[in-house]
Image (cartoon, rainbow, N blue to C red; front, side):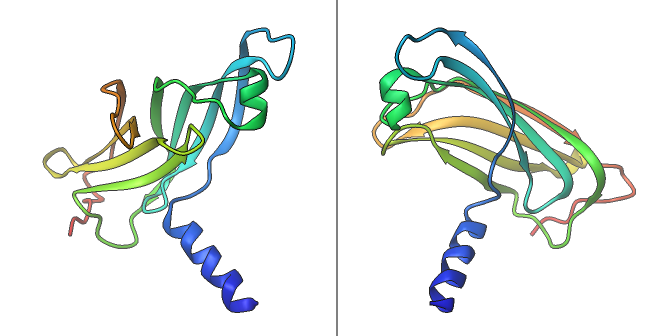
Length: 155
């Protein structure tokens, strides 16, 4: 039992940190089920202490939304900020998925990818959605400059 629980926790940790809800606003009233809304979640970068990304996205309500059967829109916006001292414990890959969340029952995911711009000592974050058959070109990008006194280690 303990091994199963530890294995599950290890898999969840490898998939990135969980989103933490910050707030939401209703956009369309629904008579039955929850309203359509825009949600804002915070995502702490699991590889870079002191950086948090805020992602806003549409969340479908109604009966399908209440049952978890709705497919959310592919539109999202991201803003990442330094929220404390930046600490990078180990060298970062040039590009890495740091978070993925399902936005439909099976086929669609919202992703956050971290890229390292070593020349400018900057962390670049991209959010987009993908789908098994066809992804969306809609995306949003933000950057967090790191003080030159703290060079970003790249592997």
